[in-house]
Image (cartoon, rainbow, N blue to C red; front, side):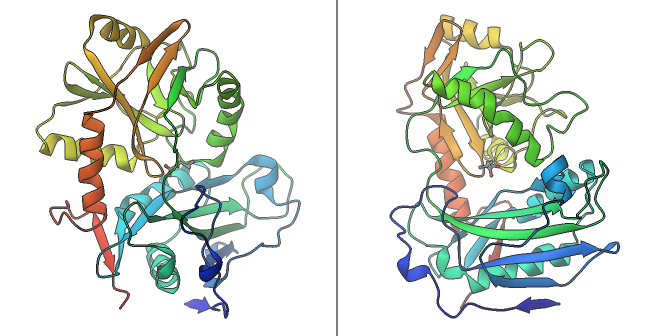
Length: 350
Ligand code: COI
C-alpha cells in the first residue's frame, strides 16, 4: 500500500540545474515508512520537507542508522534507468543486520522507488553528466535513551539531482594515526557512524591542503584499505590492483562493476593486500602509473597525488585507464551500451 500526496507547485522551474553542488538540492517528494510493533507500516510519499522527531529518538544518542547511495540515469527516450539497484537492496539489509536494524522488504524498496521516481522523473535530466543520486536510509526513531537497540525505525528515500562530486584535482594523504574501521567492527557496512568518525581526521588533512585521506589498516597502518568514501585502485606494471574485501572495507558496487568491465576490456585485475611500501617502491622504480577511486557518488575518479610523510607521488592522468573504465561504465549507466551485464532496471515513464 502506497499513500501518495503529490505536491501542487513543483520546485523544478526554480532549480538551477547548471549549479548543483553535490547533495544540496532535493526533488519534490520523499518516501517515508515506519517500523513499529514489529512490522513495517504503509509507505507514504509526500512533499519533501522537514520531519518531526523526538529529541529522545535513539538515533541521536547511539547512532543506530544505515544508508545507501545509488544512482539512476535517464536514457534518450526519457525512461529512468536504475543502476544495479538489487545490489543496493542487498547491501542496505546487510548493513541493517549488522546494526541490529530490521530489514526492509523488497516490496517497500522497489515499489517505493518506482513510485517516487515516476513522480519526480523530471528531476533526472538526460543531458550528459546528469544523474539522480538516490539516498535510502533507516534510523532508530523510538523515543528512548536506554542504550539498547530501538523498537521503532524510520525508512526514508530522498532524491538529489547531481552532476559531479569533486570538481577539483584530488590530492590524498596516507593516514598514519586514525582508522576508519577495525576488524570485527562495522567497516563493511554503510553505517552512518563510519562516516561521522571519518570527518575529524579528514578535516586535519584538509587543513594541510589535501582533499581526503587514504585509510590504512587499524593495526599497523601498513596496508591500504580505502580512500575517503571511495574504494581505491592502482595501476602497477599495467595491472589493476585494488585491496581485497574484508570486514573493514566497504564492498563498493562501483568497485565490483569496474572489476567486471576491466576484465572484459582485457585488463588484469588483482584483489589483494597492497602495502604503503609497495606503492612507494613501485613509484620509485616507475611501475606505478596511476591511481583512482571508485564509488557511486564519484563514479571513477583519477587521483592527482598521494602523499606519505615527506614523499609525494604525482600522477599525470592524461591517457588514463581510469577514464576508459569510466567511459564504459557511463555508457552502460546511460543505456547506450546494451551489453550491460543485466545491471539496468528500466522504469518506463511515458
Ligand atoms: C557514495 O558513493 O554513494 C557514498 O556513499 C559516498 C557518500 C558518503 C557521499
